[in-house]
Length: 114
Length: 114
Image (cartoon, rainbow over all chains, first blue to last red):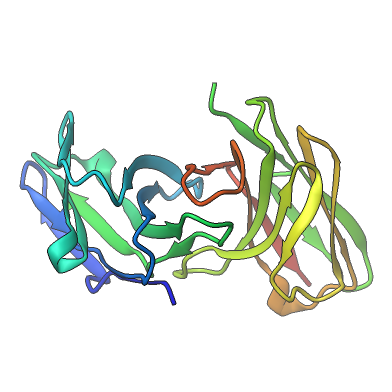
């Protein structure tokens, strides 16, 4: 069965600090997909990134970077030089190749204080 | 354009009312989803439509009735709801319902049942 664990319930940082959000997943499939979504207070989930199980390259997009490690079943998300606008709930999610629903972690609430 | 629109943004209804939530996307996506999200929880999948046919119903009570009139539209008909059904209802779409495609979410409808 699929499972996503985000052990950090809430994180609070001061603006300009770097912060890493952890995500650990479980799946028996060899082909699977990992996602990160951002949910600001307005409520809309914003897609940030998708990573395929067969592509372990890390990715950087501006202040955001993702570290995918199959050996530890982790897909961590780092925000560099955090800003107040980064305050949101961040969800890590997993789906398997076949027609199975997206499984979300419980989310990490990030508060960036000015 | 990765926009999914939902109407209304807010809805207050009594337990005897009948109302509908609407969702629309113009990205040519062939999979559409309804999620329910309670406060401080991740989204919970309710229904999946694939090529305008209902493919997944996550044991949702019959007081929720989905409808997909065409590939761009998704409705959720509500009848005889309970106060515990108060939540944020999110619509999403993806290219197809296979696991490897990211879902794009609408802003949601905040439903209050009195």
